[in-house]
Length: 341
Ligand code: MRU
Image 1 (cartoon, helix red, strand yellow):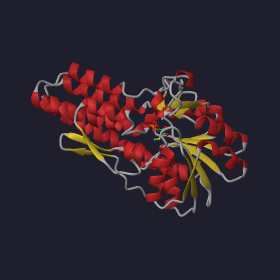
Image 2: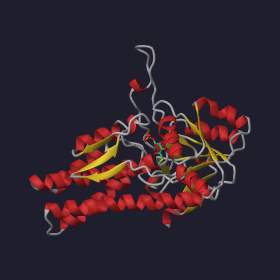
Image 3: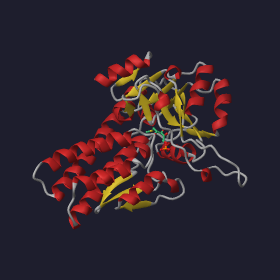
């Protein structure tokens, strides 16, 4: 089982494992200002939908404490910091979910006769609660997801959806961890995940530490593996799932879903409640992060299109593994019921 801690509380700071340095170096950074937290999220030093939310919540608590120690902590100041954090990455809705919880809590506390340090202490408790909720949801996802995995399955996954992405067991990788724990004798094919190689660098590192047999493939090798009958199931995470079941995830997820459909292989998404955005009707409304050209080495002067995410339409998804069970098609109906639960 995973023993990786990508985030921790430090002395008036949060300590993160710098994921841009993995797998070569295990370097920890202390973040104490909003600028440092935003930079770490933007640069993908911390990444993965649930972990971005946890980081922003913990970061808000820490900067609030520092502000309260030296001057007045006001609701307006805190709202400005929350807005800055929220703008750090656009696609993962977990960031908004976590900051909305923090804003609600701050609203309640500022309404009472509390000192700035009382408010920042309450924010710290709320950030820890958010983290604890993610830990519980990931464990449940792992247990529900593992039921879909038969003994000796070869499972293809994309990007990194484990401890490094969640500060907990993971989403898609949680199902894999639990199936492994249950002795199902599974093995994993991890796509490299261009351009930032989260699969080759992070998933392979995580699964290697857990002793789960893993092969890394270039993204373009998925089709031939499927055609050769070598893949039993595909499972990935998500950054935002909307009301009709469309799901945004790391660029390349959609093509895996299309390939899985073409080869008759089940394609699952795994995500906690924090990744659902019930306010959007369809995936077309999901903001897709565009990243800079320098992530994609080319000949000088060449234009680059570098979206970080794509949207898999609900009809391509065999099921969504949530903290509350597996949502099955028709996903629009299943997501609506999940929203009410
Ligand atoms: O750009 P990243 O590395 O933050 O992208 C991460 C993913 O796309 C994951 O699949 C997603 O966050 C879900 S996993 C918890």
